[in-house]
Amino acid sequence: MSSFGTTPYLTQSFNNWLLGWHDPVSAFLATGNPMDYSVGWTSLETNETYFSSDVLNNGAAVANGDGTNYTMCTGEGGDCDQGETLAEDGSTQLSWRNDAMFAATYGLISPESLVDTTGGFLTGDGDKVDVSGYAIADVTCDGTATVKGIPVDTCSATVVATERSIQANLLETYSLLDATPGALPVYFGSEITMSAEELSGLIIAGESASTFYLDTREHTNQASTPAMSDLVPVFEIKSSSMIDDDDAEDMESAIVTNQDSMMYWTNFDHPIDFVTLIFWLGGIALIAVGMVSAANAPDEKEYTAETTESDTESSEPDAETTESDVDE
Image (cartoon, rainbow, N blue to C red; front, side, top):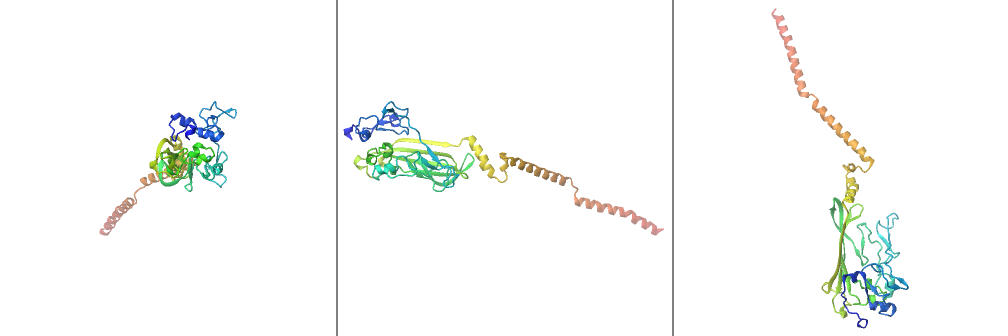
């Protein structure tokens, strides 16, 4: 490596890590010339260059890249779940862990499928997540909570840093260099949490913390799996997202309120809700009329007592008349 003017560790500005740097070893493997600046560029940025480049590649300037095209499942066919990823740029494998890399490294770097990774929905059974193209992680759902009044399943996914070398992703020379221990000893770890609405499985909140680590062991010792104490964090990306207030209100109305057997009509999102309101008002009116009628009805006991007393008073004059007739 020293013959190419390189060292085991590279220190450079933040812009270089993102925008790219030239690696003489990669250039030599590509064209045989370590000083060929049309090849050998490496970057943590997914585009080929950030703003494009004046460096010519086969007579043309290096463009920003064409982006990535994802093929997603709509759920209509029945052979896949809604929102799952089916292909990336026409391939069902990670771009740096595919059959071509497997062949180029003589089987040292195995392919990984991105089929069934989530694209925004969780089913709760065998879900996976594509972690920014660096790894595929299993999703585990083990609790429930609420997000802005919406019941959700709480799920998580983990990428263990000591088990995830991303050297082949960063170099991507499709040669044995990608699998050579210590060529670019960078490891990747991530912790992800997601909240998926209970009924639809739509992910409405989530956050992640992804860290890039450098293996600090001696170059000759880097063929084995490192311990966490061997890794030093050099770069971290944190991100979070949550459904906004307006969308949360609409979802709560459409899903939560509509599941309430007594109050489903209160959001008035369907004509039948107004019919239900009429029934409610009619029922309340009938109850009110019944209560008023009951309050105005005479008491049965008082009416009976008054009737008996009147009958007794009416019979007393007859008794006096009979007594007078006897005396005479």
